[in-house]
Image 1 (cartoon, one colour):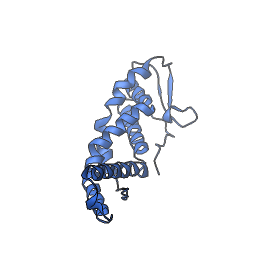
Image 2 (cartoon, one colour):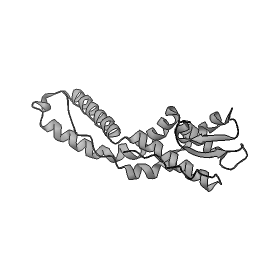
Image 3 (cartoon, helix red, strand yellow):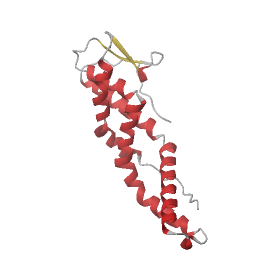
Image 4 (cartoon, helix red, strand yellow):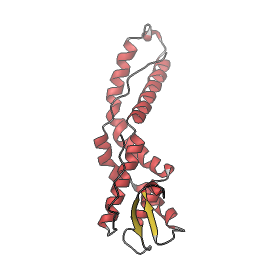
Length: 176
């Protein structure tokens, strides 16, 4: 049997708060982006020269060099995907679990003959419904994109704190 439940609302405020604590993947991957960097290095939004300029990194000795490398790591889908997955699993899934379980139980009550379906089939159908609802909630909230934009803003802020001159025309990206 197929169980359909509405995707719950994701608490993005909590997710954003946790993002700062979940950026280890960017820190781990930064060395990969330091290699081969030509100086002075101009950092553009999303590492796309067509987009707005953020700052210039004169050499690897400047305090914000690591932040620039972390920003470049955050542009990598694999790296930022791990950050988003961590936040999703630690913050969002536990918060959505209870509400989803209740919705699924309510939905199964409307399925005729549910009680006659073998328990292992019921369990599988419930798990599939939960997975689909979580996936839908993640997509609907533009979760991954919002996490990446949050990581970018944290890193640009860190660059500024570490002495980088942020371009006066730089306006951080937002997610609609």
